[in-house]
Image 1 (tube, rainbow, N blue to C red):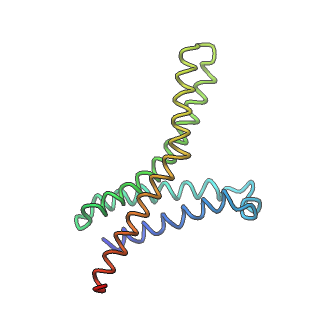
Image 2 (cartoon, rainbow, N blue to C red; image 1 turned 135 degrees about the vertical axis):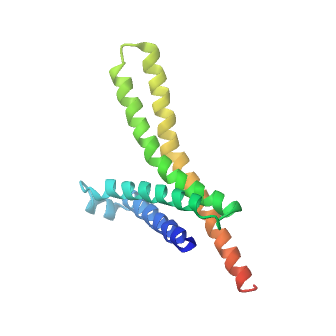
Amino acid sequence: MKKTVDIIFWGLVGVFVFIVVQMFVPVVRNALKGSEIFLLSFAVFFLLGVWLLFQVRKDELIQGKRKLFLILAGGSSVGLLVFVVLHNLFYALGVYFENVEVMRYLLEALSVVSFILAIVGGPLAFLVGVIGTIVLMVRRLGELMNI
């Protein structure tokens, strides 16, 4: 079971790197323009995050800080897509209720908060979970090698 969690974790890291490369490397971005690969990579990222959360919860050998960091990595990958969807939903409802002033401002505020959580909070939480997990893996490897 522990091997499964490691495979899912490294798959999640790989998909995250692929998403970042798609977004910030102009050559790749231009080559994939209009392609469904961009959306597909987010769906795979979300599904791997859900799978990681279930596997970590199911595996009793994973405990302590490692469990916390893995849950943070998986949860933030799930939360990223959830907050993107919430941002779009709040924005659409804000447009629908544009004549009701209080509703419009509330929905705009919720749209902004969910956007910030999706764009800043999700990736930062994912990176904290990934870096923490990798540090613990390296420490454990060092202890096994008696370094």
